[in-house]
Length: 302
Image (tube, rainbow, N blue to C red):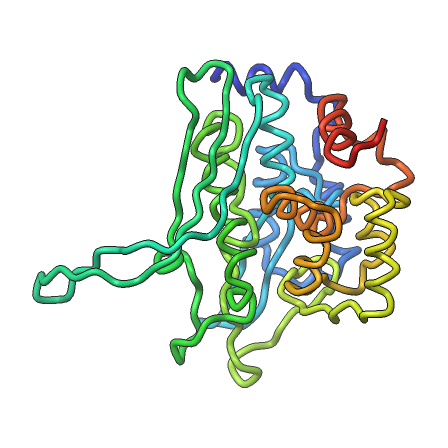
């Protein structure tokens, strides 16, 4: 067992996930019709990684039948971050802006050419590394497309998706001992769904993240924006109050402008909103001491 995993085990306070817990989760959230093999896979992943599905640490995406069947087990980026924090080796991290770049492509005849591309680089600081760890992902290598070649609905939000993939891959590589065995995050596995004729979709709005949410109305958004500006509501509590909506790209930019946040901080805001794990009520109890301190400093809360 690696040093990182040993440190995590010592700090692990949650009870081990039992078979009864997982089966209860599957029944409660409408996944009782999964095959025995799929249930077994989900159970094994949760138990081996001590993931609690009731806390949204493990999600299921399942739809289609036969050759069109898709079954994926995914986790949230916040799980990666928490596992990295528990090693006591993480001292900071930063995700950069989307940048233009060139990417080499080879055709079937071996000819090499360059195409215009986009990239995002994430930097992670570990106390046991002499140099910062950096990892870059490119749009052309990560973007998911439909059968007709057009981008999937989620990858139309290019900047947000590319940053999520960059962060997820970076933490998995930098903390391979603590994170390497965990499922991928949703941003990395989101694929286009088959047509209705091809599939019998299993739907659950709380679990299957592909369900699109309504855009937050401007009247509601202005109220939210004012609360964020005046720190009347903790960012981590936004999801509980606005759980049926998503914040659009233009609204994100307004938050950025109003709060004078950096792009990296804005990404953290969106991640917290999307995760839905923390609420204003239990904020100080569900975050680690370091996370609480960092977020307070970020929000200028004394």
